[in-house]
Image (cartoon, rainbow, N blue to C red; front, top):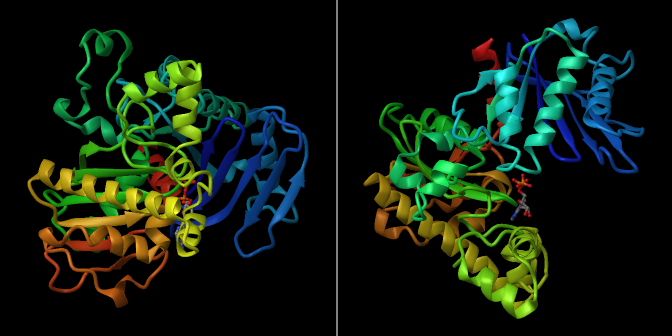
Amino acid sequence: MKILVINCGSSSLKYQLIDMADESVIAKGLCERIGIEGSKLTHQPAGKDKVEIEKAMPNHQVAIEMVMEALQDPAHGVIASTDEISAIGHRVLHGGKVYSESIVVDEDVKRVIRECFDLGPLHNPANLMGIEACEAAMPGKPNVAVWDTGFGMAMPEKAYMYAIPHEYYEKYSIRRYGFHGTSHMFVSGEAIKFGGLDPENAKVIVCHLGNGASVSASIGGKCVDTSMGLTPLEGLIMGTRSGDIDPAVVQFICNKEGKDVNEVLNILNKKSGVLGMSGGVSSDFRDIEKAKADGNHLAEVALDAFIYRVAKYIGAYTAAMNGVDAIAFTAGVGENDKAGRKAICSYLGYLGVKIDDEANDVRGKAAVISAPDSKVKVMLIPTNEELAIARETKRLI
Ligand code: ADP
């Protein structure tokens, strides 16, 4: 069984064709600058050379048509016809209060995705376009929606309700949802398997540390808390996002700088985080580490604050679960930055966490990085959102 996984952004479309017999990637690729001048498809068939095709992609429908052509191309294609594709799995950002479980797309599902445009203004419209483009290109094939907010929907009310007047929850569904759900679901599940933990009761904290970053706490794979909120702005310090902040800061900047709320929110989303804290060095953690090594004080503070915030969330989530069996690091920083992992764990001596430097000298593959006598298992678990979406799609059809 072959499953096509589609992840649409507002001007991009990532895809992977996965053979579910052995979960291998048959081909993957990326359409960039959809709807913008200079659009390009990069197609990578497994074991063959990468192909770049520059052609106007005015919308996601044309992008999907180009992906279908690339997949069936006599030279760099990997399938003879779309008949070989059993189903399409879509990453959909926001299912609102309605959906937590992945679901086969029908008119009701599309209506909910549309009703959630306000909650995911950049992604939900693109996700819907991707689904409709697949319906047009491959009529009759099942499309499955896998919600990025799905994992967080298991949170109890005490974790997801904001302490604001209740009417806003009733009227506008304002609550904490959490994001990176597919990654947290996948990594917490893999951590339980890899660490040989009790699948029903294991208390796991997942640190998804990339450009966007979030922490989740789950018991037996069921989310009890996660750091992102109504939007991905809440929680950790990220590449360009501020994470947790006193909301009065927004009003203060508005008044002092003559900006409106939308402008300040844009600053908190795109110009803050380690980029903003470092005085504009970079949103990329490698650049921040290099600047710190070169003696840049602001970069050092940004990195220290990032690590400190992660450690505080781990402490909070350990309290939330009354214990923790395993901590798993994932995503760009979590999978590659051994110094960052060690620095975070240096705050966790009170939990009996002990990192084994030799075991921690690892990148991008599943590994236990704690010492044998560590009271909590610390792991590196590479995330694989596409595979998680493909598995969900297979399960549902
Ligand atoms: P996203 O998917 O949110 O864009 P990724 O999970 O791809 O992000 O992570 C990207 C981040 O990972 C970048 O900031 C990059 O600098 C960081 N990263 C990658 N390798 C390393 C490394 N060796 N040390 C520190 N940071 C790294």
